[in-house]
Image (cartoon, rainbow, N blue to C red; front, top):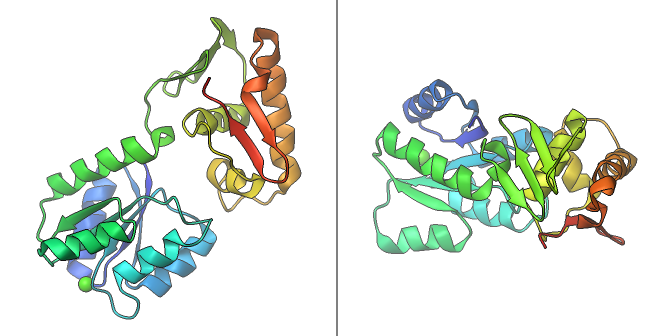
Length: 228
Ligand code: CA
């Protein structure tokens, strides 16, 4: 379950300790020492998860969380807040602005890893290797297989990733640029048509088993996969 994790922490030794443990656990880690720096890095690529220190120079972790939650592109990024504050009301305000979890320093690396695993399973099922069953589709990320209404499907790797994203985010509408971000990655240079082409291929693959209708086009908004 490797994820791209951005660590925003201004204390070098804590940053290093977290980075070391996450890297050892197989995650792809980048670090920033301030919210502004993290924001610049996120212009380039969105992480799967943000580990965010509360007390940062400049913009605080709480304020940064609030900003990220107010923008469509960054609204859904899972955030774990790190803090030396043990008071209940601090924890509550961290969660109120939209953090997914809150860990009090000092914490053990084991605890941090466990909390990360919980959030990734809950928020990012597409980065886990768990088999997904949705509306007649069974997608196995580890085996890279898809069974639709009992029939194996042959999909290209992009269609596979696109379907994986959609079956793990059912009944929500994603714009073409959001799909580009999530499925192709922000470094990918492409336009909306890229998404349309692959959606169309995916529907064609699903057509013989009568499932092409599960992917809805939402006019003016994007695409959505209906779970039932
Ligand atoms: Ca700090």
